[in-house]
Image (cartoon, rainbow, N blue to C red):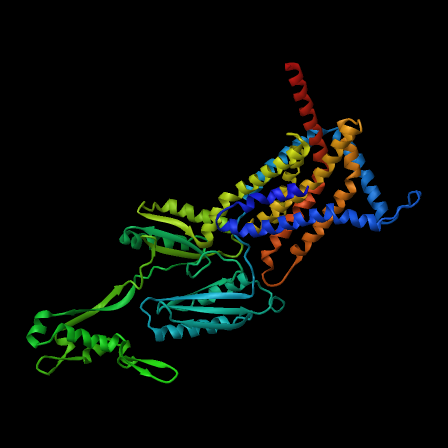
Length: 586
């Protein structure tokens, strides 16, 4: 049993990529714990029994009271119901077949996400303003947003700053009040603030809940990213606004924004070379004038005993905000006369990209988005793919998920293979244990009922299927099959050495193993309940694990006590029929 449990985690250790690194620690930790438990069970436990258990004279069976009487009644009722079930084996096999179909259907249709959306009590905000905004105006926008956010009753404190790589960007860090002092979740607070923040002109503030686990180092204004790549920058700038507008119209997405910054404001200044030659002005002198005024040119360094300071030349900041400052500038010509800049230069407003992003060798633009409250990532991903197909985007513009959304896509493709690999590993170990090809299938027949229970529990709690839920499914593969192992192991021993028929052997096995099966299942269930009922910051990350284990255990307990003996008899008939066919052939 221990080796088959370790076999469940072997495929996780060998999985590559980010998901493999995430699962490897989990698999190695449990495998080592199981190995140590196995060592203790076969060495220290027998030694403790030798010292603690004392021989005594036979005595009459004590009168059962309380829990003992209840367990005896349950066992007797189970025996009567099992006799009826064994007499209607075809219906039970049909039920098992329907359970397999229901498991597959639920897994395909259940909402999926990468990681559960947590409420850690912290929000992060990213400000994106008009590309022509000045630093002074941006600072005012930051103050306005901080006042709006700080006035919300669920917010405890707000810190923000602006500047950095771009003048039109800023960041905010928001601490929410403890869960005991607020009624709303972090996502509900974001939804409430979203309407108020949309009224601020000239800038947008995108809020998202801080997560303990987030994949990807790409900077963006939202939790999820979709990258557009193209070798032709003009095609990218043509299609990016269309795709962004189409995404913004999708109800499955929220806070859609782009990192494309190609509308920056600049002043295009053109020299009249003939006029400059006539006035005796050198181009380098005119360029030096503009550089000294607006280029923040370093001209010296002031050295102090403990520090040094760079001396930067520039005009007074009030002249950098008004184009009329160019009218007041003069250049000294070769004759020492001051010539107004307007005599030999013309200027007009123009647009320029603030930055051109690349991914690899291709120009790139990243569309970021958040999810509305209650929308899983799988639904949003499907909506994005449908929209890209409907728009008819040319082949020169390529779209793909990035960051967390990209890892989610990769994990979806590997989840089924992970579970199949775990099942195959368990089958091989059980085949070696029983020296049989068919009885491992009897034990593995317990898995569909556990899968149905886990997926129905997730649906009941309105929880999407995530990597944490996948961990719970893999744990269930190891936990649930121990019920069938206890039955099959006893039945095979009774059938081989007790001269019992297959029906008598499995019936006795079910009755004698009923109590340990019930107790071990309840112990595992009570261990999972704290994960389901837990609360506090970030509890959403742990809840899917408890929900899947609890739901799978309850459903498997209800079904496998009846399906396992029926499958055992069916496999025994199949084995005997095959044996007779071999004898006839010989």
